[in-house]
Length: 156
Length: 321
Image 1 (cartoon, helix red, strand yellow):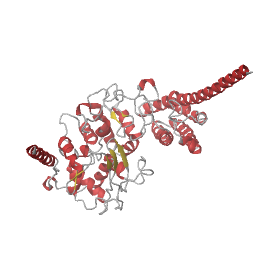
Image 2 (cartoon, chains in turn yellow, purple):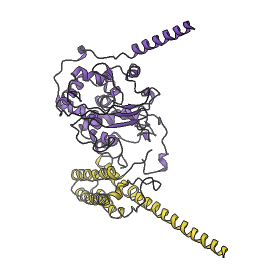
Image 3 (cartoon, rainbow over the protein chains, first blue to last red):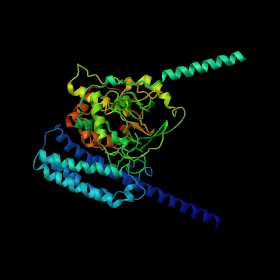
Image 4 (tube, rainbow over the protein chains, first blue to last red):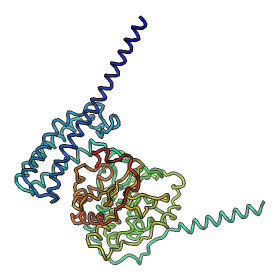
């Protein structure tokens, strides 16, 4: 009987531990996915637009519009990648401020703004370099606003 | 025995005398001020480039909140937590009792160029007169005239809460003897106008040196490692190297630097954070030519390796450019 209890206890322990690690894995996975959207989609696309504005590469309306539309696809998914407990200091690599959860509506509103301004920047690209520059500037203001409010930059 | 006591007493008196003499406040005479009709527009530019409001305007929230209430209302109250203790930023609105409403232009110039307040009071270099001393007299006269136009508001900021021996103001005379000479910036005749203008903004009003350069045990900037990055003044993390080296921003073009100052975006589109945000927001208000000048000057600096190691290897994490 005692042996059976021990086995049961051990099993429960293992299952509980597995449950814990998989929850932690889920959080780490969410952090990884949201970072990938920023690092592999948004930033390269913004860099392309920025390089055109700085005159590092020639302005190309189609490429600029395409890049802006790539950005506009991100926010809808992005806001789903913030499970509770995935904030800075709770999960390695997270820079998510606890304010995201305190004011999730505000966070979502800025994500929505990013979708709108990037879509507008794509449309503006078709009208030429000048309108694109202005619309791109509007979009990056949203980037800045959101990072300022909801990101805790890790110390280097 | 009595003789030994007398010797010790004499040495102590000599030491006190030497300390007194070495720390006598050095000031600029009234004759140093040129005849100059104040230009308020330029005064406002200097106010912006100098980031006066970043520290002297009331914080929006807690005393260390980076956001400010109103950049025109310089009532002080911000706290700066450092290794020396906590500084509380004073009221510099034109209020006569709690601000600097009674200061003459010469008083103001002495604070900016010598770190000395009226009455021979030594000021702490948390107020970056080590950089402001490089400003021209004309720009300081303009800045004082601009500050005089701002609202006078009564507010007595708390006294600094510093550790011994830093709480002895007089001791600052030693620091000032080493690092303060009140010499205005002199343009380099071999450099372009843009580089000279950028150098003036960076070394003088912009006081970029103060955070981006390492310091020695005396709290002075290590000139041979200027702009090569430093420990963060609040003790946590590091401030980046902004020299054109591999550790610094060697792969940034002048356009990249000017664009960062205008928008807050790095070349590969990370967004700057922390204490650089209010600095950048002020730089964004300057004439575009001034941002280009700053970029030209930074590109002209000698490339230097990082003065302090980073907490983590930046290549290990691509989110940190």
